[in-house]
Length: 173
Image 1 (cartoon, rainbow, N blue to C red):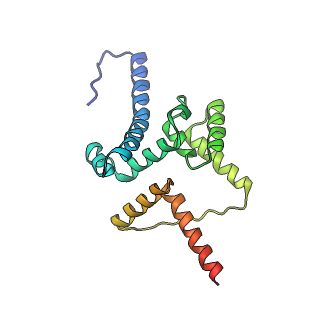
Image 2: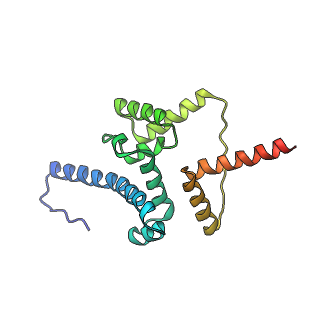
Image 3: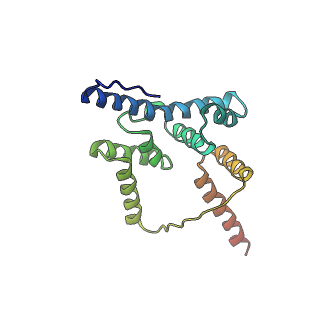
C-alpha cells in the first residue's frame, strides 16, 4: 500500500506520480525480458511466472512478445511500452517510422493507433474481419506455444495458418 503524507505539496505529488508511471511502464519491459531469459534457461516458465506474478498467461505472453520485438537499444525511452506494443507486429522499418513520428508529434498511444488505422484505410485493399473464438484452455495454450515457436503473436500465427490451409484447399480444387 502506498502511504502518502498529508503534508505533501502538489509538486511532490506530481513528482511521485511521474515516478510511479516510470516504474509501472518499465515493469512491462522487465517482465518481458525476464520471460525471454526464462525461455532459454527454464522449462515451464509461464506456469512459474503466473504463480510468481499473479498475472495471466496472455498478459505475460504479450510482455515477452513485445520485448522480443524490441531489443533494449531499439526501445524509445520517451514512449511507453504500450506505444511499442501498438507497432510490434510491423516490420522494424515501419516500427521505427511510426515511433519516430509519435515522438516528434507527441502522440498518445490512442492517437498512434488512430494514425496507423487511418493509414491502412488509405492504403486500401484490406478488409477487417472481427472473429470471436471460444477455446478450451488447452487449445489456447497449445496455439500460443505454436505461435511462440513461429516467433509470431497469436493473431499473426492464426492468420498465417488459415491462409496456408486456404491455399492448400484452393490449389487442390
